[in-house]
Length: 301
Image 1 (spheres, rainbow, N blue to C red):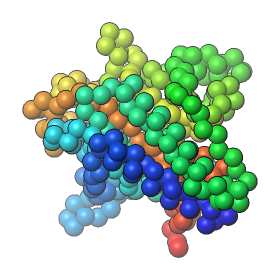
Image 2: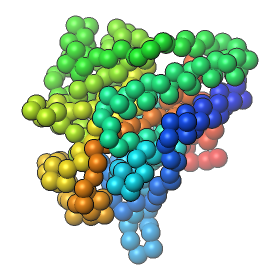
Image 3: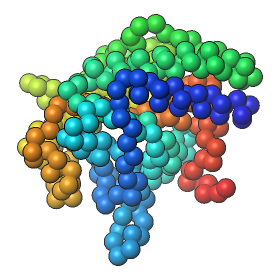
């Protein structure tokens, strides 16, 4: 079973890299030692960096956005991310692999389409090239055709409340809410038009209705696989949103500098590679999908 899971995971990465190269994306590598938080919050692993304090990177988000000003219009990265969250669930790890993409002159709908097509290609290739491994795992992969269904946050709120799970507007989905929504939607679907206030500072608000944002999640049943959005590319709006979230713009100096000289409109997403492996292999526990998992209790081997 173990080798079957990791052969499927290997095929997944192979397909994803081919997909990006075939679609004109450049592969980049960004630092995993960073000076400040990507999104604020306390979910950071501090480390000693000579005479300074540094952190393990939560996300390549700020770096891949900075690339949009470099003339590289489409970039992707497959790399480690670190979150110091004290969870103990079947779907969280403290070190994970993220598949990140960013594209200039694109909005949320454009990059949702890219993600949609990539997932379908992965499903097709795993079915074709890993039939024996799927058989060993007793797992069947259905390949959806066309575009995944879309449900807005407001529609999801109604669905969740109709299932007698309490959720108020402006809240993130609880585990119970995710289950209620997943039971209704099933399979792959996009959850769109999130409230701005619960999204990071770099997410673009909807013009004329700022309480909503151009953010989306890709879900599979009740499992969140990806988050993405149209990004804020205007310097003044970015500074405003950083301040509104209680962060100090001074801590984002080099990032903000990239926006001072003009940044093209852009959008992107990140996919949890280990969670996607859960879907491809039918695994219930994310630890089964990582060779050497790292959670709050496990630092060896």
